[in-house]
Picture 1 (cartoon, rainbow, N blue to C red):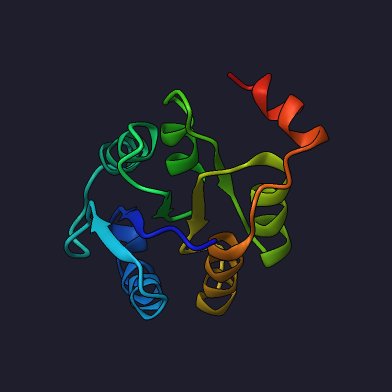
Picture 2 (picture 1 turned 60 degrees about the vertical axis):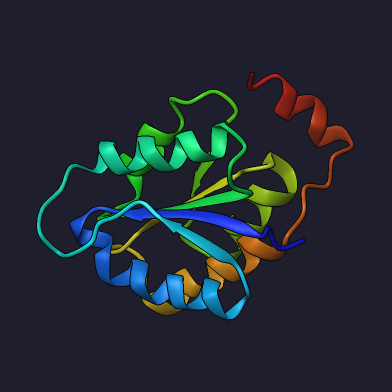
Length: 144
């Protein structure tokens, strides 16, 4: 089920890809909370990563999307928050398994390491795949 509200954020490296993905979210009928970057001027990825992760952790949004150069920094920043399970995805298969088996609630992408087409596929799958629960629920519960 596609969430009604999604938080999105990027640093300067992910600014352009954030625009592409924001348009895709808009076409899905999703309300977008944009936490920056507002331009390609340099900003610090942890600030954006923490802002999006806080929105997800507090339950104000259904899912989050974070983009930086590699996606690594954003993933690290987001996963410091309780109840956040950020997954760096490089393929639609990664995105699907992150949602279905890991109940990931933040999609992290690398603007310099993932093509726009692949990132768009990841977003579509991440937004539409549902957590399977079952044996996976026990494992996800151990994450805290």
